[in-house]
Amino acid sequence: MNRLLNKKIKQPIYYFLYMKNNVYGMKSAFVISSYPSNQTKIDWLKDTINCVKGKGFDIVLCTNLPIKDDEIYSSVDYFIYDKLDIKSFTEMGLIYPEWGQYFYNDIVEINQKFDNAYHFDLYRCMYNSVSLLNGLNYDFFYYIEGDSILDDSEVNQMIDIRDRMFRENKNMVFVQHHVDGAFGGYYMYQTMFFGGKPSFFMKNINIPFELQDWIDTPYLHGTCLELIFFDKLKIYSNEMLILDKEEWKLKKFNNSKKIDEFYYREPFFFEKDKPYIIQFFVTSNFIEPKTIYVKMFMDGVLYKDLEVRPGWYHLWHEDVNFILNKKIRQIVYSEDNVEILNIENIMTPNRIDFFRKTKEIKFK
Image (cartoon, rainbow, N blue to C red; front, side):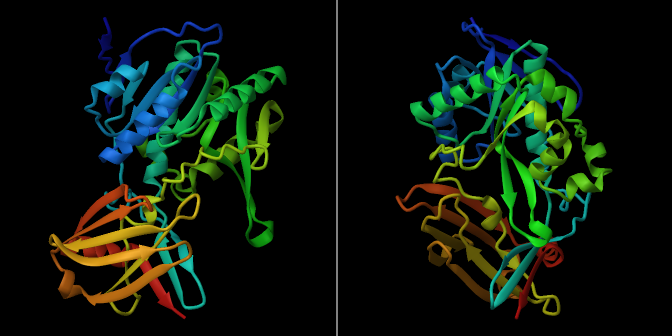
């Protein structure tokens, strides 16, 4: 019979669900993070679990959102729930980040303040999970996100990479990515997928785990997690198996259904000197470019029905009084009519003022 271990470590509270022991020689585990806020994401999470299950790995699931699905519980070996769920540093009044570019072309430039609360939550998920595995003397872990749906050949490739890491006497495996930009651009370590020895990771990652420590370190809340990982771990590059993007060819790893919610959650922008005109901007950002469909409702009535092809965007404006106190819901569908996002914003005066301070549009 399964045992539920309710262990209070420190605030916030984590719950570990222990299900069964690994029966293979090497103690390896997949760490899967998820924020299953709708049924589509729950289905993706189940698919991700199923594609790595029975491959010689235990499974650790970590989330900031409670899960009420017995099928998921019975499919994993450990479940970690982190009660601390920081959706936005800015809205909590904790941090006021710097501007970062969002989109630009010859007509328009759109900027948004970079709020990496999501990366803080994600790092805590990684840290909690790998800490658990380290305490249980696991030899190896892979971290993946809960919408990474792989076929058998791709999982086998991941196993081969793990084995190669040990053959070459390395401690971690990362995909290194170069981003073009000024002064030659910059490098980062991909955090959507990485792996290694839990003991090495816990000893060397050296990134603050507590909220106040993160807030007190401006570099952390002004930088994406991929860059933070690179800066912290690059001194150990000789001890790690570093792959480039050409060596990592898992066609489904970045699921073609996956979108960046950043592009849809809050499509509301303001010109600096026009505080009473709200600009709506909708574009697409798929790992693999795909046409998507966006239905926008205002107080339950269809307001916009948009097709967004790769490279397309839609831009229009309204008077703030027109949208004041209205509920604006966006539902995003894939090409095959699967709902992939469903988000509602209530346009209260405080919410609108938040967008004025954090979402900027400039016309050239």
